[in-house]
Image 1 (cartoon, helix red, strand yellow):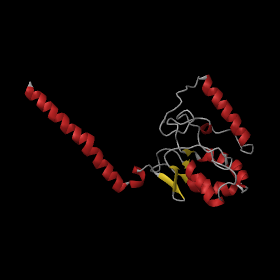
Image 2: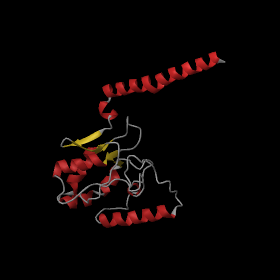
Image 3: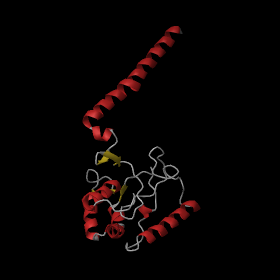
Image 4: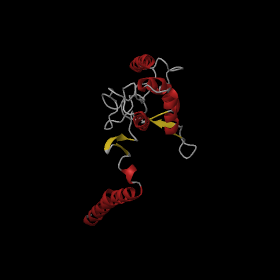
Length: 198
């Protein structure tokens, strides 16, 4: 029996070293060499300062910026340490009340927007941190953003079109727009909106 215990202990140590140390270190090294930017969080810099990640949505409340999907991640939303959905089902009265309030707010904030409020702007993603919107949801917000920045809607639409990403490999997913990058494009093209926060 002593022999079997020693064999089991040796196998445990070997497995721990291989899968707990060697394999993670190897993958970390390979990723740092081949995909350093992605391995370090796809961080976005502005004026040498980190302003976010391409992979994590964040709150924008100023009318001069595009707004992302709502977030249920953390108590106040957009908490990258608390990625989760709300877990509220389609029969939830709490979910219905939030959606109705969001629709009313969005209509009030976007009086010149045409058509109904896109469902995407009132529904959180599964992670609560999706950084993307569909091009249609971004275009719906164009009149508000253009008015807040005192530019023409056509100028803002050009930025949306330029920032629209196609389907991955041409067939996976849907076209999308990264909200953070689009808002940075707004600042680069028109300058930061005066007297407004994000």
